[in-house]
Length: 122
Image 1 (cartoon, rainbow, N blue to C red):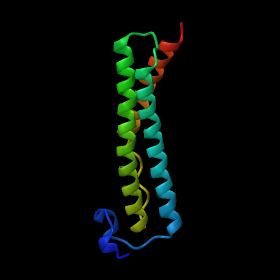
Image 2: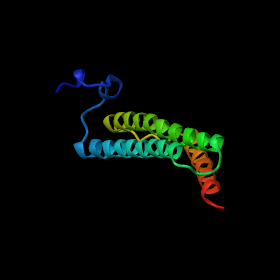
Image 3: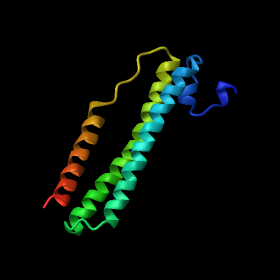
Image 4: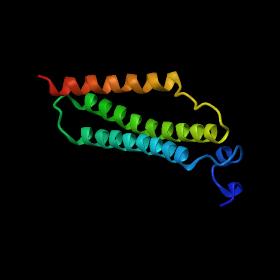
């Protein structure tokens, strides 16, 4: 397949074809992010259906936090994959995950954890 017909052009238009092992490793990381996002979305849906006995507002907030994290994980998966693949093709260092993104994910996971702990502890 010609690199001119591969999508996204921003990733494949420059550089040279890398060792396939690096691309496959990058793809596995992408899929791990997607699995994490899917698990978070499933947890958000489950929280909405399980009676946690903490009130509707807390249940909705927890559900929305988990659903939002799931959606963010999918976005981060794409950003991380495309940046990594481009860097591999150009023989550049892999881009680091933005500190802001890591802080947002960590903070939202802490909020979700606190809400779950408050829900299950007497």
